[in-house]
Image (cartoon, rainbow, N blue to C red; front, side, top):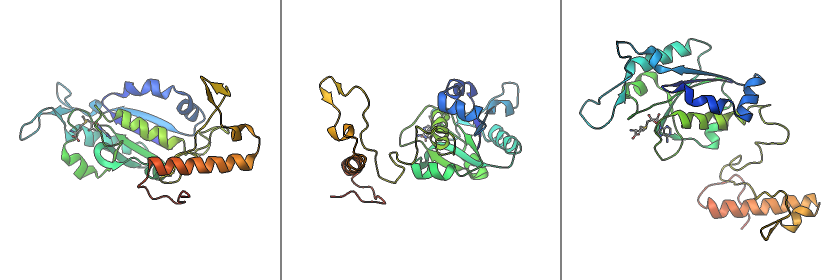
Length: 231
Ligand SMILES: C[S@@+](CC[C@H](N)C(=O)[O-])C[C@H]1O[C@@H](n2cnc3c(N)ncnc32)[C@H](O)[C@@H]1O
């Protein structure tokens, strides 16, 4: 899968890109990432990308010209991909959305800054609008990293044998993973449940299912699940 990120701060991604799973995925050729500075499409002496809002009010708004030009030029670099605008007003990023995005060959992630985008960017470019959650970040870069990070886990070959994306929280809607333990067997007076040390795979699987049911019911009581936890 190819990701093209359009941002005013491409350098924010460099540390994240050199991280373990993402770096491996890039090195193995499973994903490609390209970062584009929207300011490169700004015109005029000052290369402005933002201006004051019509009607008054605080802050600055991203102008349509540089964003349209950047998106159109980047789309033309390869087979057109899905354009995603990161915005707190978009559909929430859930595992269902992540699963859907992981089926795409290419995604363009458009990151806003300041007070956000001139409305004509949304109206004219018709992006899919995605929100990282019901809160406001300073820019779309961290939300874009969330999209990339969650999507690449589902691309075949990205996770090693030791890690699986199929048995995790939210791999089934509304279902949370069971508690996990590792060494030592006892830590500050807290012990590992006996069943996990028993070597009885059937008993372990049953305990995990019960714990997953319990957690899902307690922490996501109103969500519909494919397999309802046992009462
Ligand atoms: C400070 S925010 C603008 C918020 C905007 N004034 C509003 O009230 O909706 C600047 C940029 O950060 C990004 N952003 C902030 N919060 C986000 C979220 N929860 N999900 C996705 N993107 C977000 C968007 O790209 C947005 O254009």
